[in-house]
Image (cartoon, rainbow, N blue to C red; front, side):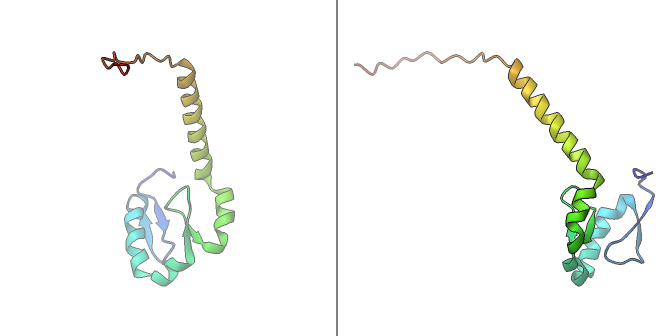
Length: 104
């Protein structure tokens, strides 16, 4: 189950590290500092910061990333909801009374 916080994930910086999913973000920060040379060779997925891939493979990863679909669907849902709100919105704004008389 991908949502299980107890499942083990392999560290992209050291293949011998297997970390529980719930601790994985913290481990990535720690390992990035411990392995700066490996960190230079990896790129972060724009859809999920837990996805670290070799820089040369980033374009391919972006095309296939499962989290891309979730993000795109969220954007579509938000924009269609915004359009509905715009269509249903009726302005109730009224100008405040003006006591100035520029002619005098």
